[in-house]
Image 1 (cartoon, rainbow, N blue to C red):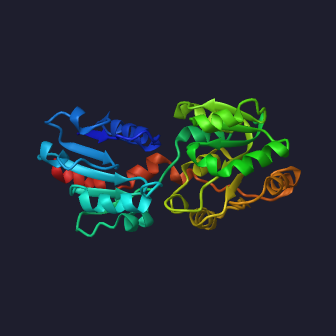
Image 2: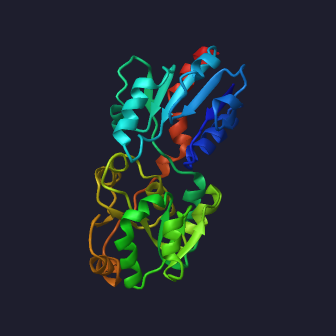
Length: 306
C-alpha cells in the first residue's frame, strides 16, 4: 500500500515523519505532496492534511480512497468563519481524523463519514535525550511557532529585565527578529531538523509553553509541551483549558504565568524566585508516535479497501 499525503501549508507537522516511519516498518510506503496535481492519477489512497480541499479533488481521483485529517482547527484571523466554510465546502471523504473532540465539534460536520481521534505524540529521540547529562546554557527555551510570540512581548521584556537567557528554536518572523536584534538575552537557533531539537532542548533549564487564551490554541494539544516533558524539562506555561486538563490527567505540576501582565510583573515571576517553586514533569513514554499510530482504527478501514 502506498499512501499519498497532501500538505499544502507551511506548518511543520511532525506526524508526517511518524506516519512515514510507521508505514515503512510494515512494508508500506508514504509520499508527500504540496498539491493534488502532483499525485498520480492511479493513486489508491489520498490523505489530506486539511487545509481547504479543492472541490475537484475527488473527481480527479474518483477511484481513490480519501482521508481528511484535521490536526488543528483554523487559526486567526476569522478562524470560526474559515472552519464554517470548510464544513460547507469540503468534498466528502471516506474517513476523517481529528486531533480531539473539540476540533471535531468546531468543524461541525453533520454527515455519517466514519472518524476517529489522533492526538499528538513524541519521537523516541526526545525520550532518549532525557537520560543525557545536563549542563544548561540557557534559562528558558521556546520551541515552535514564533508568530504567537508577538502577543507576549511584555513577557520577553520581563525575561530581559530579569537577566534571564532564552533560546528560540524555529522560524523567527521578521518583526520579532528586528526587535531582538542586539538584545543579548535571546539566541535564535532558527528552524532545525526534528532530530536536532532534543539536543537543543536539554541546553535549557525550563521549557516555555506560551499559548494565547483563544480558539483554537487553548483547546488543542501543545506538541512543544509534550516534547519538553519528554526530555525532562520543567514546564512554565500560560494558563488555559487544555494545559490544565493535561496536567491533571498526567499527574504533573506545572508553573503558570498570567497571559497578560506588566514587564515588571513578568520580571519578578521569571526571576530568581521561580527557581524555588516546585514542579513535576509527567511521564510521556506512553505517548510515542509508534504507540499512537498502532492504536488507530483507520488501518482496518484501509485494509478492507484493498
